[in-house]
Image 1 (tube, one colour):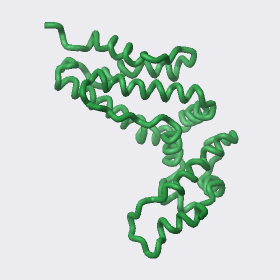
Image 2 (image 1 turned 180 degrees about the vertical axis):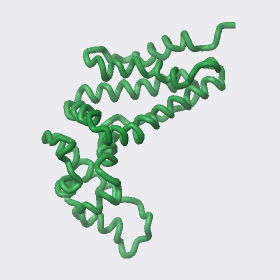
Image 3 (image 1 turned 30 degrees about the horizontal axis):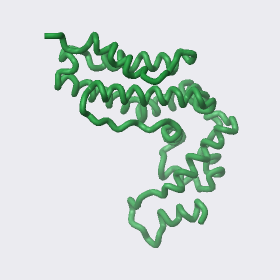
Image 4 (image 1 turned 60 degrees about the vertical axis):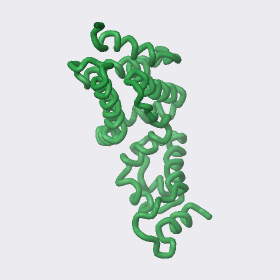
Length: 209
């Protein structure tokens, strides 16, 4: 059964009710279609919904049922290509922060190893509309996740109550972003998340009694 037939079964299905689970095979074909175009060196600006529909073997309506436009589709493609966001055990602020920074380290390594992804991120930042969607859909939720970890740390005494959580987030995440984005020659070695977290906590942790 082809992608078009699978889509018909997913949304038609003999009068299936609204809200039926979307076909993963169809979505995968669409995402892989975008990736194929990127691998061929097609700039993001030249990848239209019509072009994606043709290469994925689906209708434009199929894509618009899942994404409101190119920007939302591209964000999902990038999320698919990146390592997934981690599950946090929530046992301690330190351990959760290390897990979050390890995820950021892995994304940095993935971006370095993939010329395609590196190029896509560079193009995305030159498109204000796409960058705004990506920031809202991907970056901001990750920031809120770190804020939640830091606030839990304040509640359980791992972080001083007077610390500005937003500033603390920048102190923890900043060094990894500098190495992953601004300094491509810098190391992203194993153990770096622990070193960053422990260095920052040495200054932000509760005063010794």
